[in-house]
Length: 89
Image (tube, rainbow, N blue to C red; front, side, top):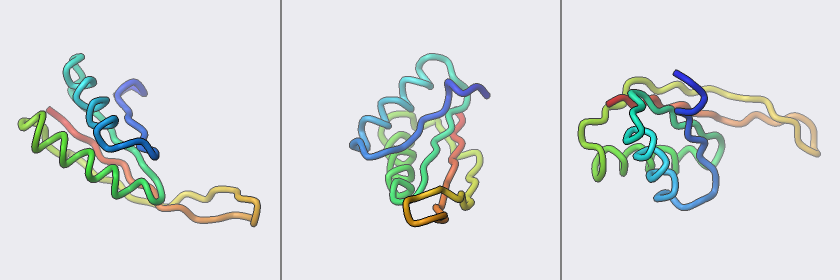
């Protein structure tokens, strides 16, 4: 898996990320990784579900990894939840 097949979820609308996932698969990727942290985690789940149910029915969720990352903020260190969802076709 290369870095090209990674979709980082941020604050854009869900459909922007769905388009990125569908584009990856249409360009021949056998695997796409969706990564998100913090409040974007629920958006990442939405992206996976919309991609699977509406656009790429043959796509499957191969793996889900969850964890915690420490990030530096102006008030010191803070823990942030992360998720990595691996989709295959």
